[in-house]
Image 1 (cartoon, rainbow, N blue to C red):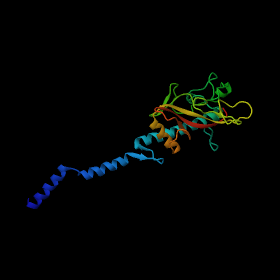
Image 2 (image 1 turned 120 degrees about the horizontal axis):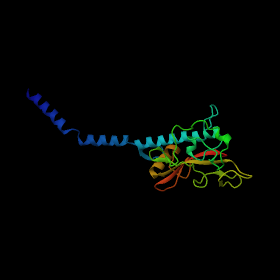
Image 3 (image 1 turned 90 degrees about the vertical axis):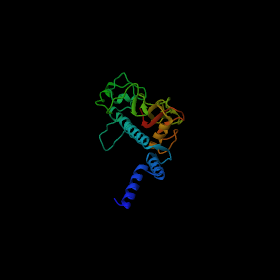
Image 4 (image 1 turned 90 degrees about the horizontal axis):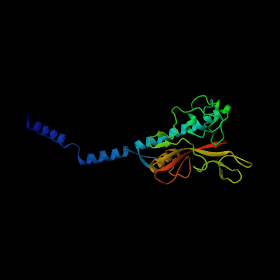
Length: 226
């Protein structure tokens, strides 16, 4: 091997031994940091893994709201509301046949005629009375949130105040119920809020929660009547 070849071989071995330069490592680290996080439209920064989890939770809740109260004018009605003609009181009523011993969202017992309408589950997996994990970090309680525990309910047409259920003269039947998730970390509540509403504000929008850690999160569903 001539002298030039020996020098070239030595340089190659030296390069292999030393690996990447400090500058190269710094650049690679910066790129990985950028790829490893996602800045959503609100400026709220989350990891790509958490962003995927929040979006999955948002999609699941949207589909669940449809199973509870969805209305598809151009398709056969398949939600609990449009099949049974009442809003359910519990998530488990979506997956277990209802009985006359159970009540709807307004606390009225289901009649035999209404229980006969329940022919098949409205959701593919069973909801448990003790709570069901929708996505990691988000466990839905069985009871749907309503007046007064979720500060949701029906608005009185005269006073505008929330009330437990429509009654009397001068009321509107519009209102809100919620899918309630308990013991959610503040970070997860904000991440879900940003994915659903595009903001981080627990006092308004579809996702509601208080500034505490952990907190309860309500995914609001607009309803009409019982």
